[in-house]
View 1 (cartoon, rainbow over the protein chains, first blue to last red):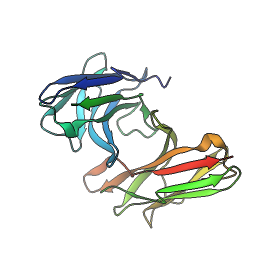
View 2 (view 1 turned 45 degrees about the vertical axis):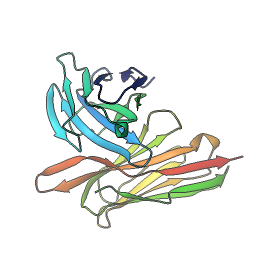
View 3 (view 1 turned 90 degrees about the vertical axis):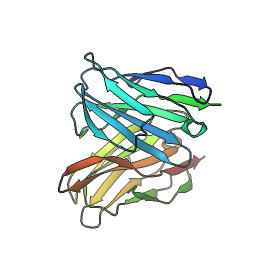
View 4 (view 1 turned 180 degrees about the vertical axis):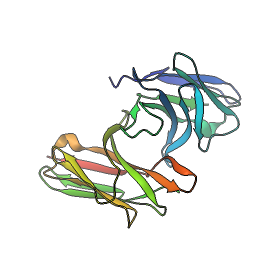
Length: 114
Length: 113
């Protein structure tokens, strides 16, 4: 157990639907990162929050949004889902905003859009 | 831009050595290395922050050549537990500050008895 908790582990939904993925960072970590992993793209950075504020944005689609709450857990909202959104979504956390002690990853949420 | 890793895949017998390379087209501030076993989360191995820095634990070590914008991961006397996909993550350096971690496409390492 890495200390980063992601729920749900698996999600199957239809195209056009909206889902919410949840992440609780490791105790003491203030940064939360979201990554998308698909077979042909590797780990793609989506967005980072640090202590409740958006810190950095990657190639996140406009249909996707995220937030970090006062208790530091984070949610990634995916809407108007398409088949191509099927992927493994990882949340990672780190102590500081730069992740210089490394990222701790959760076990991921596998999203299947049918 | 995504860093390029080589080789894409390698098969070794237990006890053999391997080198995995990571190259970036951009100036780098740091390089991370992670290992991901099938169906599991990536696990942090080490971070290199300074050009010329070398680090290691057990029989896994890494070096960072800042001038060449490259890092290499060395696995010595490989064990079955070393099997998995290895990712480098690079943090670029720009005039606007350091950029977020960008991961390479991975190197799949298979160790056979």
